[in-house]
Length: 212
Image 1 (spheres, rainbow, N blue to C red):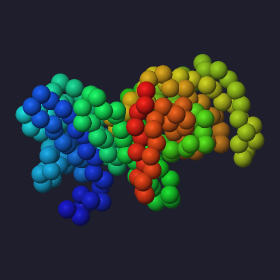
Image 2: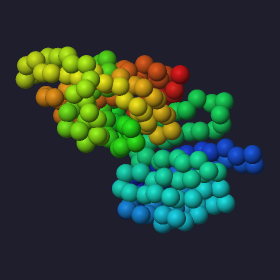
Image 3: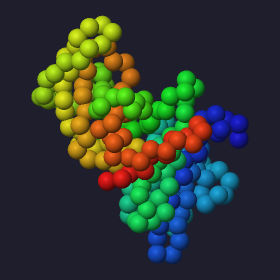
């Protein structure tokens, strides 16, 4: 159990059905396997292709995410976050936990590709280092060119629009972002995403709830 606790924080996903909800928590991830807690039961290891219960099946797993199919719908479960989905009338929300240095980090998916981002309410847009933009497959130099002042001087930037940004069960489409060619080492989750969220901090947790 100690090994499991050092691997991950608990993530809960709730999917509603006509009969009952299913709670699935991730407590460990490995290539091709995931350690899951289902409806509060003891942790159990599932291989890709295994049925979790009558409603859910594990279809993908790596060291960062587990993808389950629940009643024909794909759900991506990300380590270190909590997603509560109690029904279609409730806004999607995700809970982030503060990191060792007092910053909130979000394990996100941009255009379907995983990326770790620093939550920064001081950034007007999502900001990406050029190296990350290239890794994500973004042809950012077709974007609108601008400039930004950094510790190393004025550097070129490119304004682009991301098809999708997803954190846990919260997904936004058509989000503006800036790609910075020099001087930025960490991707920033800025206000072009956050201003569409209700943000609430309680102790070492921050809850983001989608407003629109």
